[in-house]
Length: 182
Image (spheres, rainbow, N blue to C red):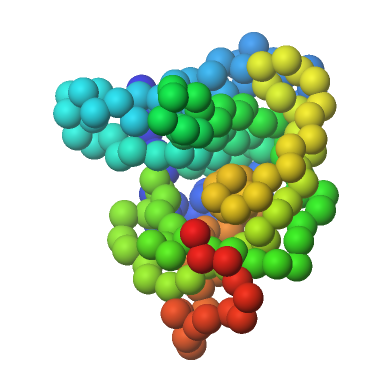
């Protein structure tokens, strides 16, 4: 079972290395295991049997002690059983909007046990280029709002940035004019 690295570990602050392509069998197995971890974390029965597991929607390789540029995202898209499911290698934000957004309830992280109150402003729209681990093909993803926030959060991990680094220490609840609250 995957063990989540906590924010007290220095490795979580280190920049990650590019992943060699095509994906090695080891890297493919790792990113598949990361996705399965997220799926399991969203299963209430699984969490009851494994109380150390917290529910998550995204996971970056450095959060499991592997400093490589790999992220996974998995969460419900609607109430019809559709999910956002991404396994991305070497993701890079290539375009971002000036318009900002934030989660009203704040962000959380599987690697961070403490609460950190404050607004984390992020681009409302981003374009990401990456390799889809499932197909080995380059993909371009255009994400807005919540989808963009989740991707930016996970991509930040690849540079050693945690969500609370983006909270204004002098005014954590500072309101940005025209920012979209989600």
